[in-house]
Image (cartoon, rainbow over all chains, first blue to last red; front, side, top):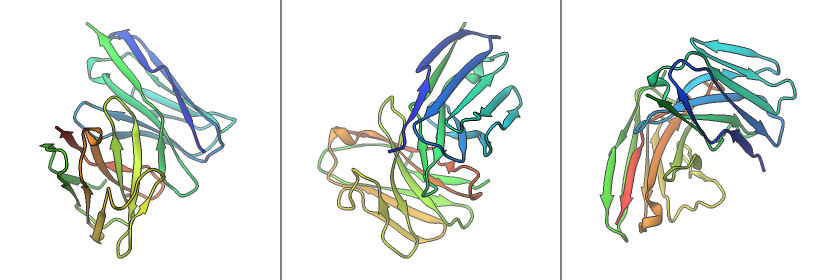
Length: 110
Length: 114
């Protein structure tokens, strides 16, 4: 079945640093989604990607749909304390259901 | 995007009992889903709540354990039946408000079974 491998599992960075995380899939699919989950909340969609090679920004966030259609990355520039949380990559399967990666936990050191 | 209200936000329940979680959306949506997020884990799809018909369950989830209702296009319930400590999780409903543009999630119900 469809599997998403997300890395790293967790990151500890200093405020102001740039962050990069990525996701690879065992299959080719048509949509990559990046979500963020704050403590005690449901995930919130950050960026959606629909085409191979697509590069999309949302403020300090940038995500790209890999040209092989099996991978994607999310970059966060100049991190700030409110960036702390869990970032999930996700894909829609052939039934239009969303399958999530295991998440990257971002910690910002004081 | 859709506003989702989920109740209760948290509960502590005795093993062997059942809890029904409600999900209310402020606009009509075609697709509603229920997810489980076990402690420190990712989200796993439990089932698709279908309006006017039985829910469609994912592998590993059964109707007897997680009965779902979807009486109309804005409301759904998930019941966690005969609970055990292993059912302690966050349960989230989500909707496909903008078709194909990612799901919107409720804030979740944090369930602890003791």
